[in-house]
Image (tube, rainbow, N blue to C red; front, side, top):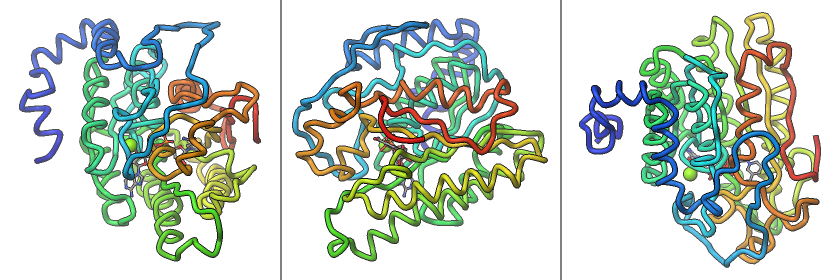
Length: 339
Ligand code: NAD
Ligand code: MG
């Protein structure tokens, strides 16, 4: 069944009348419900506002491994995507955003933040991630915004085109694209890196990014923002991420070239280069299990970032205030790595 139908039937989604009511109660309703969902977030604490000093988890972490693509809901400790800790202030009021990989991790943090900043949000994800995606949809709707769920495999070009068209169709337009979905699988030696994995990584991180951005441009004729999630791996590659690091370097070049093409259309194209962030990608093959014990320990902050710590960067790059910012890569990496 189409996941959106189920919400509309009222099993998770409130009825239309209640939905309109939720708009009236706005952010307050969102925050309360989010609190319930984020009970497992680190400390469940509301840090809010300027000068927050998040006491986020530091290594060592409990040994864990999930089957790819992994679920945020099954991680220990649970990542903080902003469920209780992100507060919006209307910076994206009325905007319409598509976020690939918006079910978990950095994409989920962007989805929650965008909704609380006043945007309607469509997310793409793999069918196996339905439980994570439904939590995100509920958070978006509790913020009083429209949520659209678009499951499917972005390694398929025709799906990518349909994804963007469906997002724009169901949202009533498209102003913001966050191209964020990716595949990362650790392999120690080039001799063990198979063509099948190399192809999988390229298809997900490069081809799909190209297909989705290409499909989005015609929808963005009145100006818009494209944000690509790259990585510090573009600048400071790890030996066990030979295929993945290449794709992240290529995404940086993609952002810088496309930004020049689209400047006259008033479409801005920027990227984000996160450092080590506590997400399902890392516990479902992205790192060897033993490396996870000390994940993030080699940064000056001596801990991984939480997805919510990326949210403000995705908001600022999407917002109209950044009208002179294009072709840039913003780093969020705990003090280590470029740019
Ligand atoms: P994540 O696992 O939460 O998100 C990745 C998402 O990609 C998945 O949720 C999944 O929905 C999507 N995806 C993967 N393959 C797909 C496919 N074939 N079809 C459809 N969707 C697919 O992990 P994350 O760490 O939040 O990753 C988000 C982005 O952040 C990625 O681009 C990743 O490269 C980048 N990044 C992550 C880190 C980190 O340490 N976690 C560091 C630097 C960059
Ligand atoms: Mg996921």
